[in-house]
Length: 303
View 1: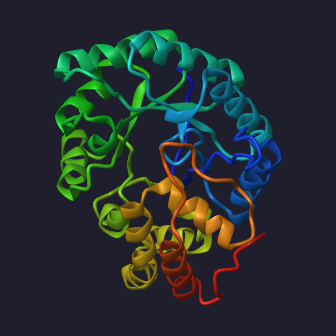
View 2 (view 1 turned 120 degrees about the horizontal axis):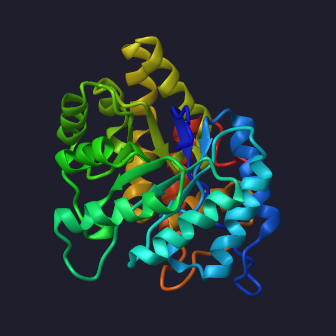
């Protein structure tokens, strides 16, 4: 298995589309990736929920992988998101991500039928057998319909060589404490629930996987730096300043709210792909006001 030193702010870029025909906008994707890396984020994670992976064709998915890995060019780690109904499709994408030069993959199990723990375990084991990439086990029951217990995820880190990290997004901070307890602090885990960022760092999280970095990179990085320095007063101050935005983008849906925020900053990233609709006028006005309050600079965040 390849090794990876992953920590800090793991940024989730959106997948930009041309408004004219709905195709992937390569030039804007490159610009967004450069913008995130220049801001100081510690890793790039294309093709998560924010990247609308579920709404891309196979060729589009592969193209975003190639473009992202090529543009990052080793400046920070690249963690490619994979979420497929079948194990075979997920393994195929894992192989492709490895061939394209990704540093790790983040696997979110999803299913039409309810899966038992052994079925989920075997899903990860078969994906791991197909690739040498490190695997982040991603628990997000709100989007996947599958809720993996801390016990199951820790078991996978112990019994499946490639599974070496966890992203917990259930919104239950006790899950993170349980992961830390079960592993004795040896398994890196990452917060995926934006409103829990402060509590997650207090619980021992190695980092924060967030789309908020697309809109307020300085604030997300400041929170991580303060938490790492043990300055919880500064961490609380920066967290509560950005909390209204974290709550807004989570409640409104990440692709539509983050894309709306980027457009407010002057970046034409296109609309979300149907059936998701763009943020309406009232929502955009509310988002602009929140961004102004969080950044103290109005809504203009363009690079």
